[in-house]
Length: 267
Image: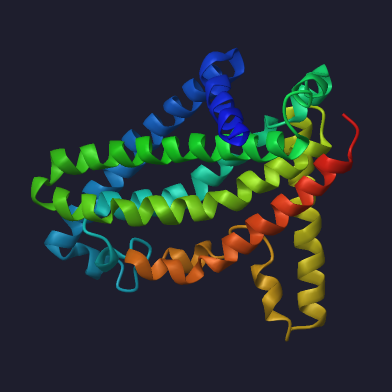
């Protein structure tokens, strides 16, 4: 029960603190720019070019939009864009799960009422709720554009919405878990983000070296969070869940490591 209370506090902290409100305002501006200057023009171009036959003439091998997989161009472009933008947002917004509290010394007071692991998992769950809300809001904005541009395609687009939400949360879960881990090790959100970048680059270099020395170890291609994104772009509907074990394993491993450090480290 305390885990859910802490998760709710994490969401409220985003809504009531200056840093949280600035993060929300910054993302709203960025998403509005992406929506107005990229998704809408690209969808309009694709729809017009496809109807006139110019798309096949200009780009005979064009596969970026995977138009046959989604009901509308807007939904297709949103899915591809969100696969790259929302993980970056997760890295920035989830960087302060426990770092600032450790620096201020407030973790020592929190552990008087709940355990370290309750704090750790409560903060993680709170960030999951935050990113779920962001996913729903951004998807809702795209569905609103679909309603304006192509009303007859709105119902099929809404029917695919649960597929996008579930799979996007599977993509985001390991990134939030990574930030939960580095937030335990850091004393500030900026330091946590720096740790995440260093860890990512270091693991990437090691994987590249080992992979070049031992090409048969293809399993290393799935070590980093988000390694399944390239495959998800070419899929739609619930068939995307065949890659669900990858992010679930990433999340479990990262959360377990972070929980160990949270349990052992001095507050």
